[in-house]
Image 1: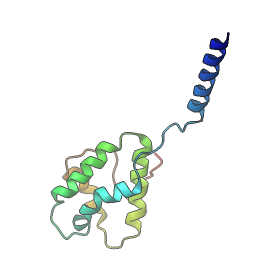
Image 2 (image 1 turned 180 degrees about the vertical axis):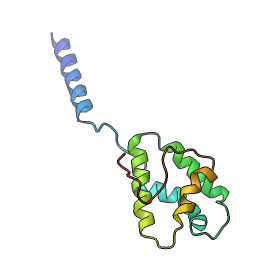
Image 3 (image 1 turned 120 degrees about the vertical axis):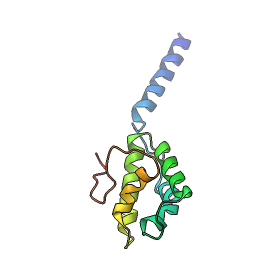
Length: 117
């Protein structure tokens, strides 16, 4: 009887942890986003004709890391917040980064992108 009670209590505790755990928590931070894409700034400002290999490496690694919806929303929110604080960014060039770097996104990168959808 004691083994059954201990096993039952263990199952209840595990079930409580699973119910209380967040469904999807972003593993990517704004620091990760900015660090991955900082080498793209010369291209975003029009100072270089093409994004460099470091920029494309950052784009590709960020794309690979953002598998969960929460991660993709974090990337979107961080980019919009960061880009909004910097004047002189060419948003057309920013929007072209995925294609320039060989990454296919199902949405456009734009200041008007809704990060919640």
